[in-house]
Length: 168
Image 1 (cartoon, rainbow, N blue to C red):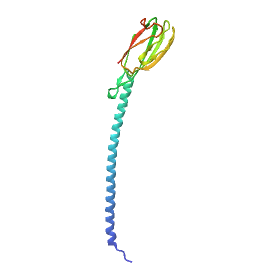
Image 2 (tube, rainbow, N blue to C red):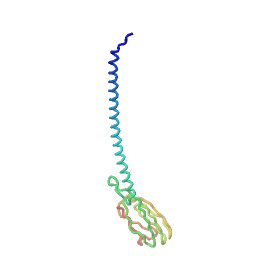
Image 3 (tube, helix red, strand yellow):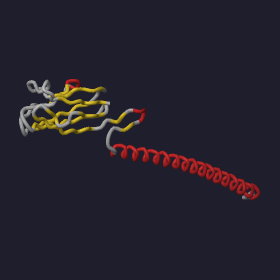
Image 4 (cartoon, one colour):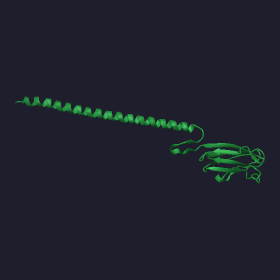
């Protein structure tokens, strides 16, 4: 039996060349894919950094006092708490000022006699309490304007037990 060494000699360099081209092609594809993934990761990292900065800014805004502007020029609502006392025909505070959308809590105490705190436009009313009694009411100031608050006990309003709630 005779073996033809001529064909075997030509096949080996050809096979090596095909394998080398395949390996180089695969390497080029892997390199391109790796570069693409690196670019995507840079873009992802940049987006994460932008979002982290936005979260930080929102936390700072939330920590500040008063109403603050949100996106689109809207005001961020806040909670405003007032302690008001009532005595014979007078409140200790005769003017309250808040922003539209603020949540208001009125902590009311009678220091002399039977009194309450009422503002009709917001349907806000405390319970009537006697000397030493405490009560509260919470509501949203959702209308702009100047509104009268008063004591609804007997003729206290007519006798001057009133104040102004100013909603800007």
